[in-house]
Length: 100
Figure 1: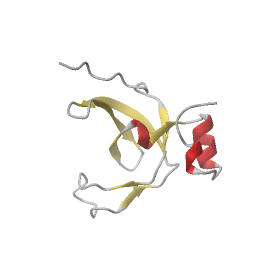
Figure 2: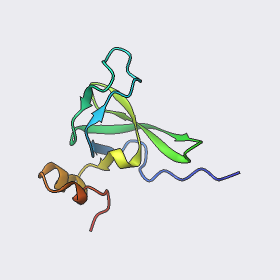
Figure 3: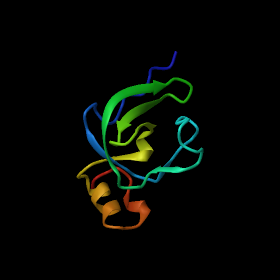
Figure 4: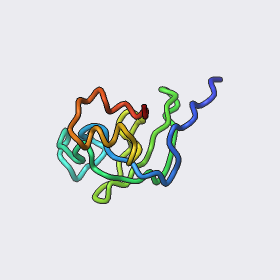
């Protein structure tokens, strides 16, 4: 059995959306494929789960208007260099989640 990959971010961390987040069908009251959270939208990790087939952590993020399940590629720690770059409108390549 493969050990679950450890979560990169802790519960309670303030984050921002690294990309625009659309309804994938998990929000029945919102049309599918509708933009739900714009890139840069602030949120907080309220729970961490695990997708067993993909062996990746899943983060339940409270964005204030909705709680969404996000992967590590879809969020950035608030205040990180990558988050600041994204909010400043710099190229998406700067939004890697890794501080220089």
